[in-house]
Image (cartoon, rainbow, N blue to C red; front, side, top):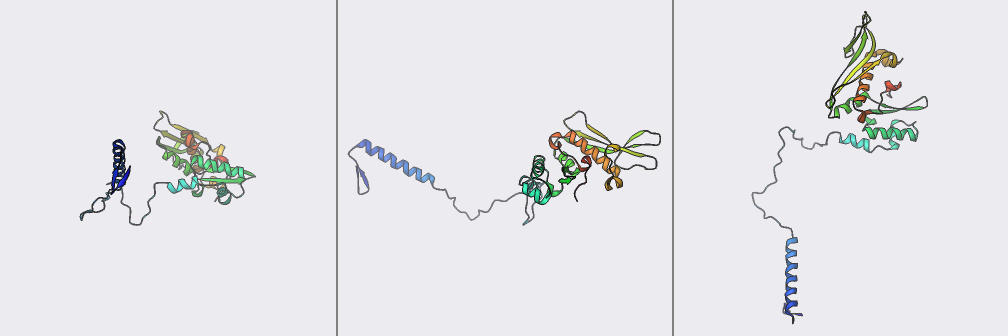
Length: 246
């Protein structure tokens, strides 16, 4: 077999036919692998982007992010060195690691004051802010609202549940707090009733706003019972008997 004047010359007809088929297959593969370029037309223009009716069109130059993206990244990328340098320099490696793991497991951001690591009396306390409890509940699709208030004893010695934190100090004595948390997937709500005698402390906030403080304790207790998967292991400073860092 040879080439003569650009033509294939072969003494075997079978070899000649197979070689021709091979050349044709190679040519077809080369043609199909080349990109197809659409002809340009005078009327072609970029496709128009239509904003959905309920979605606000971003301003020119604005940076758009999905909700809580930066916050979640901060929590996920926190390190042991970050905790010891910025959150609690006096913490041991073990204490800092426990705090780091809790923050990441519960998606708490200490840089936005959702959680604290406080050393007192040689011990470390992991504190979670009240707003973190309510935020966690609101993010849960089964959350169905809550009610909270205080428990007072009137002049006749009868106990009353009041909404909010207002009461008449001249005729009513503050004795406790209460809260009720509702879930869409439960037939009964989660109720917490706590005593002033058990939680009241000789601290500035308790002396100036006792009703607010006892209501908060009742609320976080009920939220923790209603959403254990999101809030177990989380306690406020008032429950632990320590003051939050400034």
